[in-house]
Image (cartoon, rainbow, N blue to C red; front, side, top):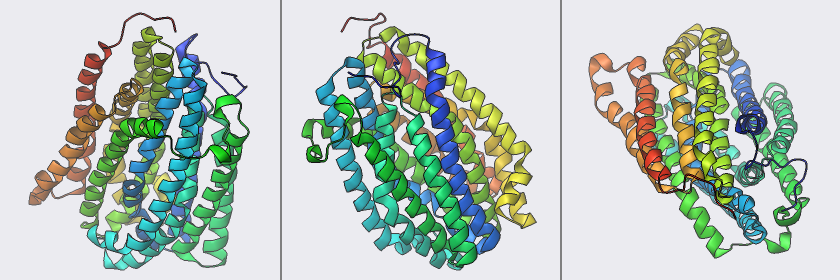
Length: 454
């Protein structure tokens, strides 16, 4: 398969330098994405008030819940494409590209319709306070109009990652993100559009990034070139995407569902805790993406090497991704806590909201590396082609434990506190990582220890 300057050979040479070359642009892309999202929250908090801040912040877990199932399919696209690239199979790679882009557009349209129609009803089910529910529903309805572009960008980026190209998505995101910030300031400060202005700025920038990545794929070489006349669903490819991607999507949905349950519990603690927790969650997001890029590296590198039958590199990929995720989590997590008050003041001018945010940061920020360990090993397991097992383990571990904690411990009056609520995160991460480690060791035995010729 013809290589270009953006491609990365993951099947030969030293792993760590190539994993870092892959992960650093991906980390920068994710950090920029969160920075631009933080700009949404900060502009609302500073220029529209804590009520609007709470309205926007309370929708994050709901948006994740509704999008994660379809974004899971993009993980399937990454795994399949990486495997076929490693094996040098042009025909199957082309089918993955065209099926994935078609699925992205269809899923985006489905999400747009569902989100626009049912946003108010879902917010009621989440026990959103009456003081913010109207603004939150308005924000969601405008935001979901951008779903087709969001899905297109995420699927396209996932395909490019499968051949080691993490730089061009970074360039496209940078351009659209700058536009997002400028439109935020224009719509909220000048036109006084409040939460609707923030959502409108977001979807305009999403359509720009989606258009750029679509054009990029139409200019690719060989099997990766996207042709409009080839768009469609290839049944065998779609089934493979579903087999790998749907379990990943279900896992994302269940994680988001547990976060929705936690958000509903936070909602019972008052507007100040909602605002503070929303701001802290945005800061934590920067820590998470710094680790999650090594989950993506583990998944993509493992898939390509299995496609190339370079089985001896599987354990090495896991070890390096684990060490990198731990280092990133410890560094950025403790940095977030140290600068917590200053960072939280970007989102809110209110001292009580800042104090509430620090309660969450001190617990989750310092222990976030457990989440990085859990995600990195899931990347290796999915890269080996297993989709269902990590989903079941995560559902029973991370998600099930949190919901059980809220239904039992959190209901005890003396433990009905923010501290008790947030401690459920690190406990669930550590237990789930250990369960995934056992699964990895069992699954690894099914592959040869030595490399094989194609």
